[in-house]
Image 1: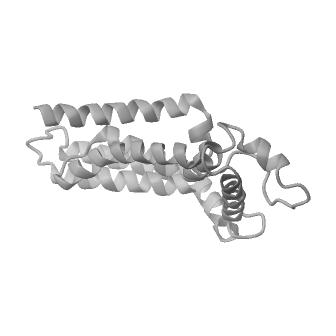
Image 2 (image 1 turned 180 degrees about the vertical axis):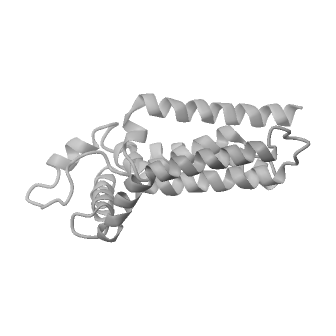
Image 3 (image 1 turned 90 degrees about the horizontal axis):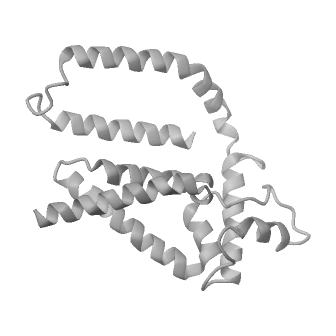
Length: 202
């Protein structure tokens, strides 16, 4: 459900960018192209609507005892306790599930001991203040080109992709502990920073 919001945000940003660009600069965006694209979007929307409706029906239960929001908040709270126990360097990369399973004997969880569903909290628990701070500084350098270009009316696609990765990683654990997904983030981040340096040198 969070990804639905990410898709909508991305679509709105792309739409706003397209509105900024004249038809002379983007001759492919003709009336016929827009109509065909609209038909494709409507067809996909109709096909996906039943699935989306089923997912949104349970939206009112997200803060129930075993709801997805409660699950995430409780996991972040316990990961925060791990971070407080080892504040400088954390408990170790990818070891948060182990410590969540063994570090709180006698306490009743509402979650299974897995990776925290938040990138920053997981980094705090596993790498401490040092690792989390370094990553936040790196992430800020990645998002900065996007913000600067957006203010000038330019959409930096690589920075947008990296920023959407970071947003998704605040709610899902797979974007950190799956190297095949993390590699995309670092690829997009590198391209974004490289593009910013190229513009500055031009």
